[in-house]
Image (cartoon, rainbow, N blue to C red):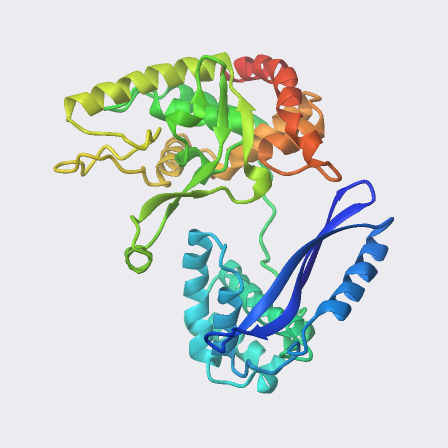
Length: 402
């Protein structure tokens, strides 16, 4: 296993697997990993350097065939990836369980491309899975078998022959969002009546989504400790995840909880428009009145929390992440507009900025995507760049809401 990343001019870092070694106490085989930093003048030279490093430093146990079945392979994969998000593990478990039922006791070497094609075909014909779900089964199977090849437990991934198979591509239809329709929905949302018990909840969510190009989970993961209303900025550091009751019990956690953001680059500091700050202030005031009236506590300083089923519970809980989506669906249905997802607000916030000639590198930063070939030092200055161009966005936003 090797992951190579360019981190500066002629500078690279790589995370490599150096095989397996026996634990002196337990006798178990443990994978040896190392992160290295080195200089190279090109990507090819970096690949060659890492290959030589692995060849020189790997243990004699590398390539030992300790994994025989699909079930053992899947266990080894997740043991080797302990930092996967709770939500990812929850989603993967659904596909993993079905894959294990089909292939769990089969020897890896005996699994053929025909076996996998038959499995995907049965899922489609017998259980009528959608193309997107079939693609998820395909991707999960592929990542397990690729991992087996990387660890030299399998000579070749049998799925390499299935490029045109069922599930090999999601077959999603590309959907064009009409800008005028989108603007119309935004105005309808801003003119919608307030719903008790909070003032401007939907409008505040809308403005945060547009201002910050947030992911839906990032919106519901916001806390007041990460929002500075005086300096007009917010810090995106967490996402809110919803686990099934079974998964929450297994991990011994609440089914709604905070998790880290999707990627390291997703941690970012974002400027806020004056109108967003004003709506946040009014919304916060209504939340404080609600908490006081019902004798509830908000120790975690949750921005969007549940306002039902709080009886007998002194601590409020994170709101379900479907709230914003449901409100948008209701408005689109009522006024016969094309369906919009929460992610569409993120996309359109990005598109509108590009249309206003805000630099792409700045727009990528707002999305939480690290611009290509940017060093960590440059990334640190991106907030200043975003803030400098925020005045252009703010002028456009006021026109959009007018």
